[in-house]
Each structure stands twice: as structure tokens, then as C-alpha cells.
Image (cartoon, rainbow, N blue to C red; front, side):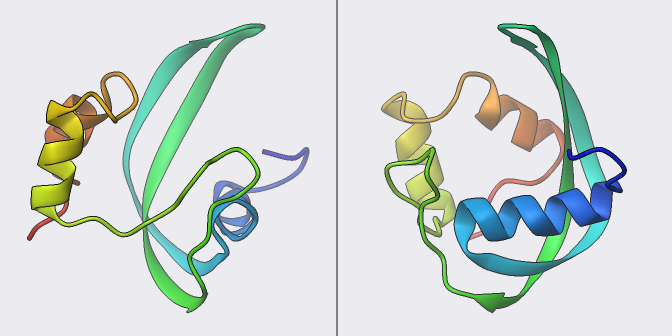
Length: 98
């Protein structure tokens, strides 16, 4: 987050910068704390509705794509997801539905 930014403003800005998508933030679906080189990252994840833009990978990703449940499960089995992502999304009931 930038100084003075609300969560909603940060979500809109970050998703536009990192994915090319324009979104309307919804409810908070969960939060986690992860170790970082200079302390701890506090991550707040919101449900969002895409209202525009085109999906693309930002400068910190090799690729971006929409995945269905089968693809998600395959990525998990092959170790292609960030540590604890699948478990966390399942706890939040936020995995792909189909």
C-alpha cells in the first residue's frame, strides 16, 4: 500500500499494475502474515469483480492466466503454487469452482 491509500484503492491500483485488470473490490475473504526480508508482510485478499482491462503478467511474474479447478489441482500436485496458497484458498473457500 502507498501512504494514505485505503485497502480498496490499493487493490484497484495493484491489480491494474500487476495483472492489467480493472476491478471493483468486494468483501475481504481472508488475510495472512508471511515472513519478509525486512519484517512481515500482512496480506489482505478481497473478492473482486473484473470490470475491464486485459489479463497480462506484470513485471514480477512470468505469466498470468485464468485457471479452472482441474488446472488448479494439477498446479498444486506439480508444486507450481506458492507455499500454502492452496491450503489457504481452500480454508477461505476461494478456489476455482469448476
